[in-house]
Length: 109
Image 1 (cartoon, rainbow, N blue to C red):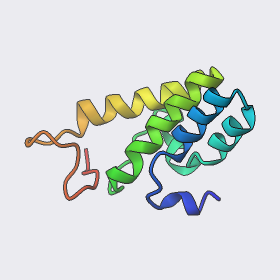
Image 2: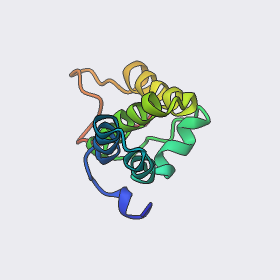
Image 3: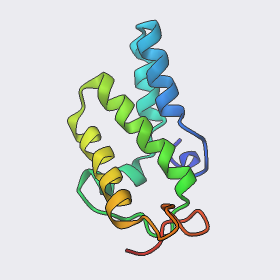
Image 4: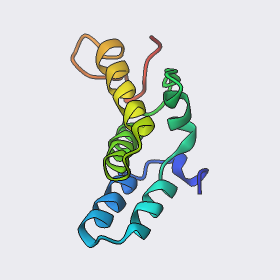
């Protein structure tokens, strides 16, 4: 499952979290956790920016989903990781033309 999540899959974790909230069925929240890409999340849980070279359009929806899962589950660590991602991108990765990437990839800080 985690290997599959390396590719661009949109915000499946966010969608599944939304379905959990709409239906009241926590099975969907559990599935949202499973659709959360750990190798991208783990460094940011520890306050480490390891985004260099990653395809941003693939990563951004994942972090929106991490925050949504955190909202519904009360997981402050995941919420903090999503906030750290936002702060890192906004404060350190915005390029002069206003985008957050070069050729859709995170540039070295």
